[in-house]
Length: 316
Ligand code: SF4
Ligand code: MG
Image (tube, rainbow, N blue to C red; front, side, top):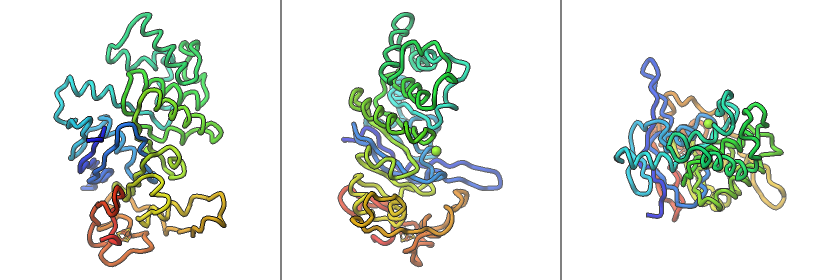
């Protein structure tokens, strides 16, 4: 199939004490096409980071499957799994926390090169220099330590580290959320350029729709562990189907409010706790369109229009 990555009925549950279960990722199925940027959006606690980490193999799924290049990740032999692990990398939200403060930048960038024994000596050193240049830093930076860099530069170091093993697929987990607004666009542009140069596919995680709008080919919207809607980026902004997506969109300021008639939909309350979430539709406690059935039965995830998926009883 055209999918580089496919997730089928994926669940990731965390069991707390007293029979409490956090259903961080609860029965999610979707795929990411080769070469696309897939934007994944949701409030904090929606499970988007957990989904990203599970996809790249940082944690095992509770159930369901992850297919990479049409191969079931869980069924790969150790050699093939090692290759897949190398090809799937992650860039973290907080470039400060994810870089070891006691390691020199060159060694941080070479972590994957060393782990997979890709190069040593002069070749390793040259790779480090190339990677620094690729992300807009200077080769002399290899000798320095993370604290000597700004937030934006540290995120560039994190990107260089991910690129070091020549990945095919990158999960970018809110890579610009911790950065000053003034440098967010620079990092986005860098990621976009690298995508073309390196032939990458991205899962780009963000907490707000506006952030992923211009870079995503398709977008998925998560709420309390469930995928609520998924479609082409443009389609999602023009014809949002799910009431939650509609509310998120209504909160984005528009450049010309007179030309775009969009009424602000204000949601009541905060998202409920992901521990023992609402029965039926997870959004039912806040949805302006909630009906009786919504708190009783989970809406089915289905393709309501070609390539446009949603889970909502309004479309049954
Ligand atoms: Fe609202 Fe019901 Fe649709 Fe959930 S299923 S989004 S509660 S209308
Ligand atoms: Mg997160």
